[in-house]
Length: 629
View 1 (cartoon, one colour):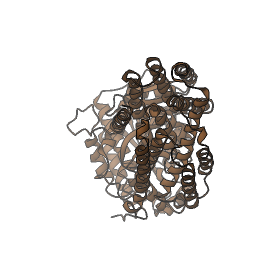
View 2 (tube, rainbow, N blue to C red; view 1 turned 90 degrees about the horizontal axis):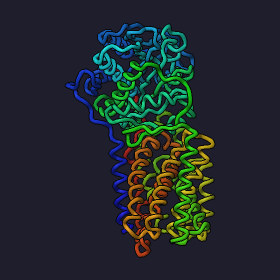
View 3 (cartoon, rainbow, N blue to C red; view 1 turned 180 degrees about the vertical axis):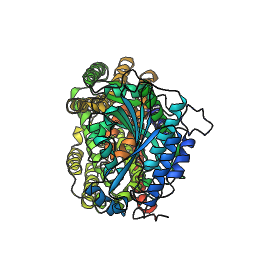
View 4 (tube, rainbow, N blue to C red; view 1 turned 45 degrees about the vertical axis):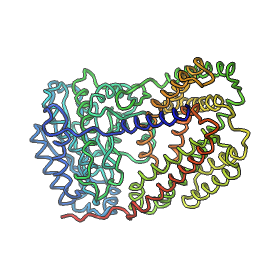
């Protein structure tokens, strides 16, 4: 029974996660005037993204003139603002193949104002950039953002006057150094009137749009977005882990500039179909219209809420938050994480007490279960890096921008390969990681680590993971001996990781604490119903936890890998640990262990083959320069 329940609940979790990752259907031109329509927005995209339009090009001037006409037609009080392009930005444009001299080393921002009924109130800004890199028509980056802003303005006007003034800011020279944003936020007369900003971006040509960044101290902003964004077509995708990680990345967007000035706001982007990023393939025909619908609908609903709010969100406390399948945003204060941890530990204690009395659980076996989790994570860090290296060594990334774009194009293959690798490791732990010869396991891990380090260069994550995985592989006595030991040990390990995250980075702790609480709840319920885990009533809470928790983790894993998987493919091993914690009590019966482990080996080989296929599927050397007409 457990095997069927394991396969069935995992299949449902995968289905739930995949469904949650879908973009909404694009709305046609016959949509109500007050609604966002991707098809109406696509008319703007087709006009803007006919050809690349980098700063200083003929097409850049064409796009600028077109936008000024459209902004005026929408009833905006339109003006331009010019400012200097920094020397470093000019050099960057030259390296891309552009001509800063043709632009007079000047950025030209386009500014539109839709006056509110009370001009004394702080205004709301919608921001996107209208320049592209010289190699791409930029249908996604950022013509889709500009088009979504224009369509949102049209819908906002149809909804009737708002109290607050709306400012439309279409910046220039973002691609070469955020120069247009620096010019506006450095001294435009409207700058100090703006109390909230929504920025639109893209790094790819599809997928769900994610709210990945806020201003600092953004608890009130997150609360407003949670109320407004869920009314958007397709709901929302957002979590404080993304905001925490992006805050620490070296790159930035136009939103970086007002954020550093203390302005509250949101940054939205879609990053699917990464092969289109800064590539000739980023054309209107290849752009995912569902992505336009999603980013535009979220922009419209959030802007409408801000424009009609009695008071704009103010800087205050931080928030821990994440969406649940795009339908609701669950949020709490950073300190509340300690309460979640305490509750989960209490439930784990109930499960452990009941399993000790009725199923023979010992503290030593609980510890061995935690060690299984350490082995899984360490081995996952090594194997995912090795499998990812099959699609192209990381050393290529430093060679040129073309090599970077090539690796981005191969990212979906890397993700599939890494996911299959984590699945194989999950199956290995469920079947008994010590069943195969320990020398064979250790040898395979050593070969994988050597491969990843030889082709990818020194990597402390791989080295540390290899040392831990090899050492534990050669110590079979440290593997869990019972289902309860393996399960409670994994829950304890995840909660320990949650405690560390809660101490060092509370915004990220939900990643461990929420699934840990779910698993502890399932463990306590099952232990009270039937500690032997033989009856359907005790297995049902486990299956429900796998479907709900596993589906949520699948939906979370995809954007996480698209964001950082190129550099850190082992992030799927960490997320896989959480899935393993949920499915651990559904280990297959003893008579099925051998074929189960053979299947795990086949899945691992399939993962390696899928990642290697990227070399064939995406052999190009990077985006070619598109000549201007």
